[in-house]
Amino acid sequence: MEEVKITNLIRFYTLILLDKKPMHGYELIKELEACLSKSISASHIYPFLKTLSKNNLIELKNTGKRKKKQYCLTKKGKEYVNELINKFSIIIKSTIANKVKKCAHCDCQIYDKGYIEKIKGKRLYFCCIHCAKSLKARQKTHTRKNQK
Image (cartoon, rainbow, N blue to C red; front, side):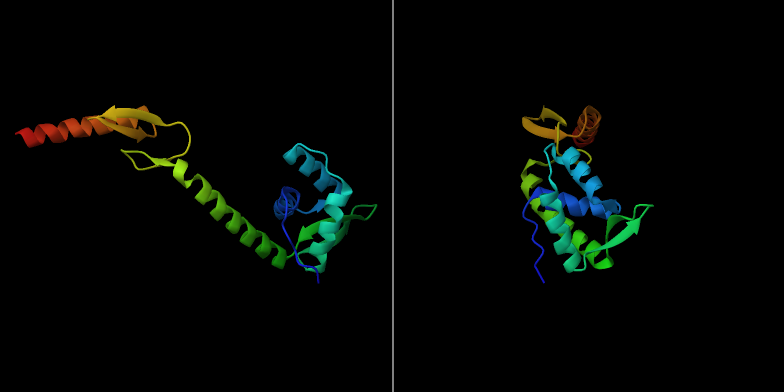
């Protein structure tokens, strides 16, 4: 039995698409072309589908009047895709972890944009201007209480 190797985005997306719903080979090619913005040939897809089939990760069903082959993940295939997604999510999380900031007020994670303000000489990150205002108001109240 040939080992399943995910060596490119075409193979990865093929599994992701099959995880969404069963598909015909032609459907897969068209969806992959739309996702990847490049031309996909049958030689990219069918040998990989054959390998998936040999490893019992997909099964074939004949549908419609013309008995078109439809590929769908088996239970083992769904488990394989879930493991694959978990591995990729770990890689992605570690890659963007240093780009994620936390709001100084509500502690939510900020990946893109956000609001930055200098308060008491410190550059602080906020998810929005409202959190910045709330933190300043809370600090003013805290300062007044300490002065009494």
